[in-house]
Image (tube, rainbow, N blue to C red; front, side):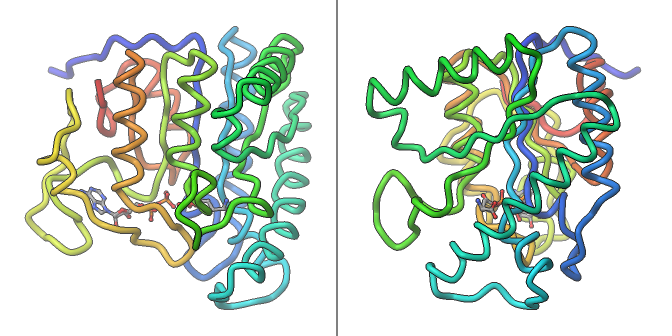
Length: 265
Ligand SMILES: Nc1ncnc2c1ncn2[C@@H]1O[C@H](COP(=O)(O)OP(=O)(O)O)[C@@H](O)[C@H]1O
Ligand SMILES: N[C@@H](CCC(=O)OP(=O)(O)O)C(=O)O
């Protein structure tokens, strides 16, 4: 018998990785974007408050500019992200409009939450957007955030950004969609014996030992940043579910309490 989960999900943050938005050959996964728009609009219409944290600026930018490989130089990546973000949000706007749902773009760096005034301004903006039934679509502000510096604006980590946003706006649940069915006892791409865990109550050093890096060509975080995100949610008494974003309709199953993916909490 299936054991159903009890979730609190009035205010939900959904994080979608590049791997769910861009095919391995670099083409944009319009079906996934359309499905996301449909599911999130349906959630909103049922009274849930939803924030979408979407990666994909660099992946979509590469496709838009006809580039096959992500360049190594950070400024070039930032330029591609600037182009790609515009295109990505245009696609979201078009797809959400089909469901008569308005969106608003929010570009953030993580250090914003360190400065009390900026922090408050960001929170005010989220509250105002949600009060007006707008879906905020968040990405890291890639023009500002830099990888090479050991700084809080580390480039390319929407996993942690999504948890920072979720905990700051008091979300109950963070749904993290990736290209994998959940958290395994080891990297399933490297270890054929790795098993899917349906629940992880606490994130410990042993949990980190089971995590590996990114499996996709365009993604950045891998599993370690997803575990850090889970840790943040748990510390704030929230929950996180890591699930496969191949078909975003999986969100309906998650909200119905079906035991899909891995529940952290
Ligand atoms: N223990 C693990 N369980 C599941 N996936 C893992 C694990 N360790 C490493 N991975 C890798 O992490 C990848 C997901 O991270 P990433 O490629 O950054 O995705 P996204 O673009 O969705 O953020 C998986 O495809 C898998 O290759
Ligand atoms: N902000 C960048 C990279 C973000 C990132 O964390 O990527 P991913 O590992 O696919 O979630 C982008 O939009 O391409």
